[in-house]
Each structure stands twice: as structure tokens, then as C-alpha cells.
Image 1 (cartoon, rainbow, N blue to C red):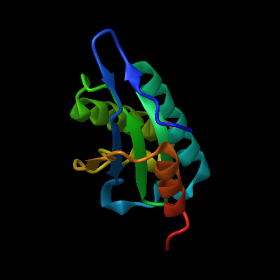
Image 2: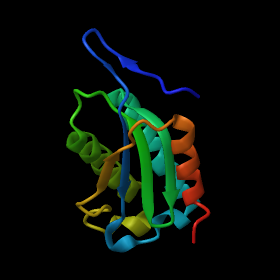
Image 3: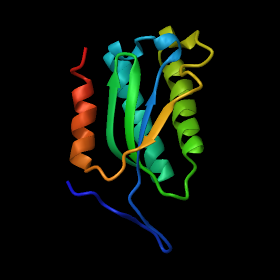
Length: 133
């Protein structure tokens, strides 16, 4: 897949962001397949609502990798706050073993631009993280 530029009336952009974030205390919440699938569905819903494209998404047992194509007019902090806030609330409502946590995610996260890297390279990187020890 070629990198696709995002076009609006006034801008053309190709900005991929790599986000990594963790559950509180690095809990291994994604060992539960239902939690993982629910999380992915929620992120997809949120990204549709925000008009954000998911380039790649992977959940390791205790962290998440997201590569997102975001408009330059969007706030990265607001995008992450929405993803982390909605998924925290909904997963804790859906899964009783997570309900006792005051918050599902740690406050901090990692974000980096992916530079001029192809979508295939990004997808390969995210997929390869699943096989790492």
C-alpha cells in the first residue's frame, strides 16, 4: 500500500504518529482475548468519529502500539485523551476484573512521528513486536 496523502480544502498532509501507551502498573490486560478485541473495536469507533486513519494497531500483553494518520489540525493530546478516556471507561464497565481500577491507563504515553516511512514498513514493525520476547 502506498502512503496516501490526506487532503482537505486547505491542506495536504502525510503525518503518521506512533503512539505507545501502557495499562497502570503494566498489568497484562491483553492476555484476555475479549479485552483485546473490545479495545480494538473501541479504538476503531473513536478513530472513525475523529476522522483519524489507523495505519496499524497492535496490543501486546501489557502495552499498545498505534500508528495513526492524523490531520495536522488535530491536537495529538486531545486525540490520545479521547482514545485513552473512552477505552478506559468502556473496558472497565464491560469487564468486572478491570472495574476496580480508578483508571486503566497510565497518564503518560510515547509519541513520535514516523517520518517518511512506508505504510508497509510501519505494519511490519507493529506485527514484529508481537513476536518479540
